[in-house]
Picture 1: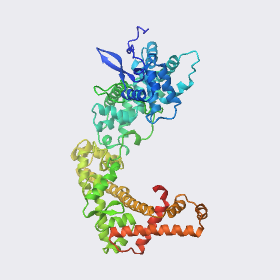
Picture 2: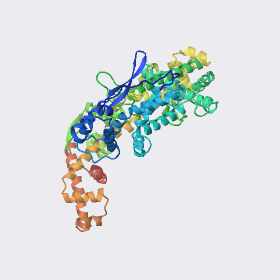
Picture 3: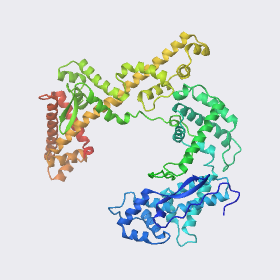
Picture 4: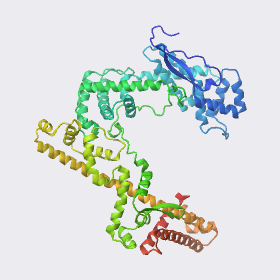
Amino acid sequence: MLSPSNPNPIPNPPRRSPNVNQFSTYLRSNHEGGRWVLEWKTEPRLRRNIQLYTAQDPNFADLCDRGEDGTALEQFWITLALDPLPPQGWEPRDRQQLAFQHLASYYEPICHNAARSIVDKHSQILWEDALTIARLWLQKHDKLAEVLRKYQPNGPAKFSTYLQSILMRNIKSEIDVGRYSSWRLLCKAPDYEIVESLEFIGVKQTQVFQILLARKTFKKVYIANRINGGCRRPGEIWPAPQSEDFAETAKFYNDQRLLRSALPEVAVNPPSNAEQIESWIHGCLKALKDKRRRENELISIEPLPEQPGLEIPDPKTELEDAILEEGSEGDFPDSPGSQINRIPELFETALRGCRSILEVQLGDRLVLIDKDRILLLRYGIGLTQQQIGELRGINQSSVNRKLKTYKTCLLSALTQLSQPEERAIDYLQGWLQKKILSPNREDMIDQSLVEAIKTLKSEDRELLSLRYGQKINIQQIGDRLGLTTDQVQSRLSNIETQLHKCLFTTLENWIKKYVEKWLYDFYTSALSQLLNQGFNLLSPDIQKILKLSYNHRIPLDKIAARVGLDEARVHHLIWEGICQLETYLNQKLSEVLEMSQFGNFEGQHIAQLTDEWLKNLHKSD
């Protein structure tokens, strides 16, 4: 019976129909008529799985037809989860995981009973929290498997009583350490969850980063003052912060925003005060609690057509045990430019659009090359610019200019700027005027400028904050800092020059890190595929011996013993295979390069390419 003093009674769910529904439904909470009610909703994936087993397994279909409490079906899923027979062809690959989910669905009433027992005894505990803890624990398959294995059927307690006692202990343990107290929640939540909470309620990105830094500094102050240095005893709810905590947080926040590691969104905005910090922290906590409440209303794995169901999600990660984390890099979401993940697609499309680019047949593959064949000679065969010039009858400066044209074309695709090196200065001016407060974290140029600002001195970052963040004119800046307008303008010009240099250096690095690497990979992979085709044309005996020598690294004498030939014959076959590969590669490249034959330099490079490919023969198997 519920305690009459408990203002937070847990609602009762309706009775479930037996068998199929007992293993494919979950509790969903709804707010109706000013109160919360629980109802059962079908999980489509579990229902489909039951339908599959009913259609394919006559024994399972017979268990479903029995008008009992589901004990037989429970044992069926336990066996499948813990000790399954070899899979049938029609069974899903994740049949064991599904079996655990069917059991978790069946044990939902036990979770409800465990939560009820805890809430009846502890009126300060919310039933939503108690039920959430129980269900999260039950959805951990390893925990459920351990309980199922340890339970003694011949013991004094029924399994439902045994499982309920375990769930109650877990709820009590979680609540005792204050995991669901508001201020502990704020300190323990990971940054990505804070970001999601704030973005959901429409907080702008610039302010999100300010709140993240405020939360980080507040967490350290609060832990030091109220948890480690306060009067709180272990097991007590974390207390509310005091006004001095927010004042101290504001001081540390303003110090942090001047550090080189501070993000521009933080550094260029004005200093904060205790009232602003308190407003941010309470707003952050409210957004976080609202997010948890939405999740605890149990969102379904597969949304139903008419309305998304509400179900507790599978726990993918738990909150970390450590409260104070060190480091600045991981405290803010910082994703690389999305262009990086699309480099092969971006670069191939860009190269195809460059002038003088042709699509020619190289073996079984179409390859993009320029009309002078410079890209293939440089990045495929590996000739120097001087060697290419001598081979094609042009001077080295022309080779260099043509290569730079193609690399600039690819760099433009990466940075989304035409002529990036020439337009970097103009871009920087516009970025400082319009985007410094909210740089695009998915844009590589923006990201490079964010890193460049971190390298500036604190007084230079403060000057950028005044001029471009707070939009203060040069005369007012001079009055505030005790400088003449010429001095302010000179310092701003020096800062912009430093940022220009950083940006140019970054662009040069990107050419090596992304553009040239892709060109090497693009053309060497084409030649590797060509060598693979030539290898398949060799006789089976030569293929076998080359694999034994290069792939398995077997000595010559042991190869001879294995294939039943003398060492001299094996050595001859290896040499013959290498020569045939080099000849094949030479022939195909001569056709593409429109040359009758190669000179010594080119021949040496082809021999080197062949040898490198054979050394990596195991990768092409």
